[in-house]
Length: 202
Image (cartoon, rainbow, N blue to C red; front, side):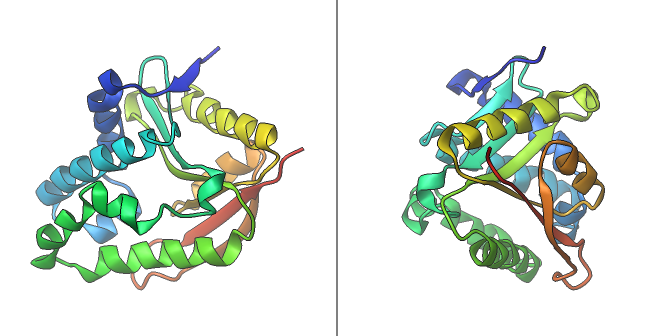
């Protein structure tokens, strides 16, 4: 049985490494950051800050070996982290990093995600914002254990769980774990599809 727990400070470096390896060749990440060297550096920078931000709300979960990471937005935020928290986490420093590159692709992807979530999440919900498993540990049940842990939180709180994925093959994975497809749309020109799914609590 795979044990899932909240992340701690000592786990952060390993969690970031797992996410960088999990998403380095991801379709959406490659769409946003086609330069390979910049991609690796920037997503490591981003994941570390995002993990530290979500840790403030006790909503980052890992397996015992920190091979898989689930970063969630808790239901009391009603679908998105307030901008003041994002500013305090230092994300405005990303603008000069991106401005000389393809700035519009990550911005478009961000707003696509935000607008989809805002239009589909009509009540307090757990939002699965990040789910990544190191390639060396994929196919061993780590991802499902993380998702089931989130579902247990949704059932406990009697609220839905919601996720957006940009890989069509992930639809089957989430459906096996109790989610239902809400929408699949190619809303990013030249990019991967945006697929949203929801889990309804018992």
